[in-house]
Image 1 (cartoon, rainbow, N blue to C red):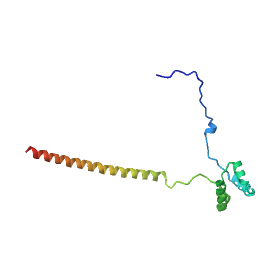
Image 2: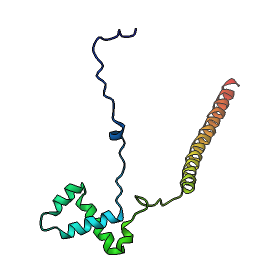
Image 3: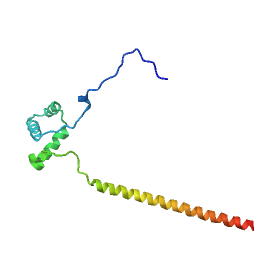
Image 4: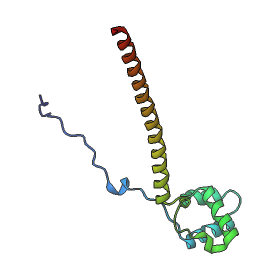
Length: 134
């Protein structure tokens, strides 16, 4: 039985789509170089203020410094986040199929053993029944 309609107003919250969609921040090379220059120009204790103002983490600053030192400004540009995949989708699929094949081979072996055991048990019952009838 359905509930009767309520006289109370609806208290539903409608989400703001701009707040719901979160995206990863991308920093340009120019921005990174500007922030690194500002951080180098900061006096003792002012780097934290800079990081809070720009909403950055000290680890980002350290990473950018390391990248700049190892590869120059070209190293600061990243094309894609995260490590590259070690295996292609075809290789992953082949490995999955090989695991499935191995699992099914084991299952088949167990099933064949059960069937042979049932045959032996049936033949033993037949021998005992034939021996008792004579």
